[in-house]
Image 1 (cartoon, rainbow, N blue to C red):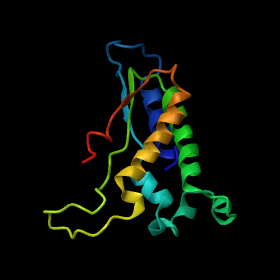
Image 2 (spheres, rainbow, N blue to C red):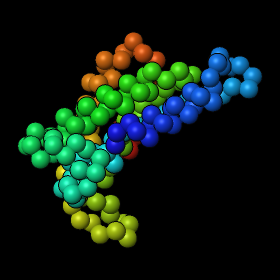
Image 3 (cartoon, rainbow, N blue to C red):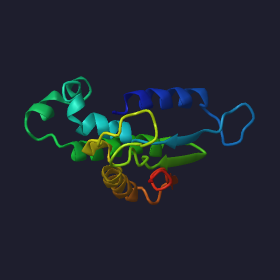
Amino acid sequence: LGPSNIESFLKDLRLKNKGCKRFQTGCDDVVILFNTGLHDIHRLCSSEFRDERPSYLDEDRLTSGSFHCVNEYRALLKDFIEEINEFPAALKVFQTTTAAWSKYGNYGIQWSANAQSMILLSDFCEYFNNIAFEVLADYKNSDIQIMDGYWITYS
């Protein structure tokens, strides 16, 4: 969650390739495949991580009653995409989040077949992918491509 690691990683790549032009010998062409979804949704929306959220989100927003995980996801995703959009990569691809667990678990595996919580339901993940499509629509003139990770994992 949040761009701190992404910012420092991209900054290091910029320094490494400073002054480089695409396909120049000795320079790296960077391809970025990025995703935010299932794990971030789980951390933002699940009651399981409620006590951890103040360590990575603004505590005032969390305690003021204005926190809504969907709005927070949208805001964090905008910041994340903005970082990626500004980076001079040869290719940038956003992968939608996977469909997560099926509604009643995975039968035939050694895990128990307990009903999954709302946070990990496939349809809940689709809702967040739709948010990602809305945010990415603001970048339709950029060179960010979209690759499906949802429908190929929806059982």
